[in-house]
Image 1 (cartoon, helix red, strand yellow):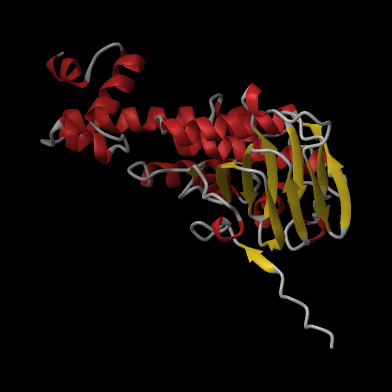
Image 2 (tube, rainbow, N blue to C red):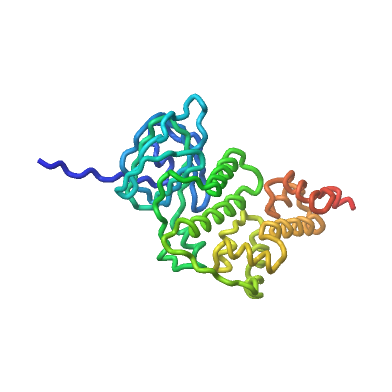
Length: 306
């Protein structure tokens, strides 16, 4: 009697602890709240993961192993992608690409440290819309046999941001995911993107619309993706055209507008400096003071006294 086929497991990194049930150990580091991307950092013993599919595009990248745990053989495991098998060398900076909705499983012959970055397919469609029909964007599966220094750099920068959580984190994450998406479209897409020419910058109407939106939402956590959507273009082209039109990046422009709003409130309101900091979109009073001093040479308190 033939047994019924077992259903393929689904890993959805939109869910908390999405892969924990299939792995020996839970992740040691996990992102939360990043739009369109999700990062997991793992430290695992020798293991094999059952066949599964991802709802998002997934990139895997190894981390350096301690010398005592480095593999002796040339290959540290095998991977099956869409039914195809490959033995993998998995050197530092080697990456694997597992497009959404294809079958995947792998094993590791040694203890391993690695990172997994999951990307929403819509991210590539949104960023690639200026070059190619979004419905035609398809990533090519990639075995972990070749290094990619740019992808590794993005991984390490996102890991550092996850560990440190420093100022401007959301804008940094937006920039990194934009760089990564463009790199994937250029190098790992089944269709080569066509070049676009935007020599005239942003139109006056779009500039007015964008400036109005920024000024009305200074108190919120503005993101590059959010503002680019107002201009109806990919974040990559918006970033370039905004700087071409205004002379500064969106991040620099937003910071200047927040300083201007803080100056106005200092002069024309009875709010405390801490309250003004929040109204102008700064994290707290210390954040406002640092930016104010760096840009104007005086603190908010000194500005009031002068």
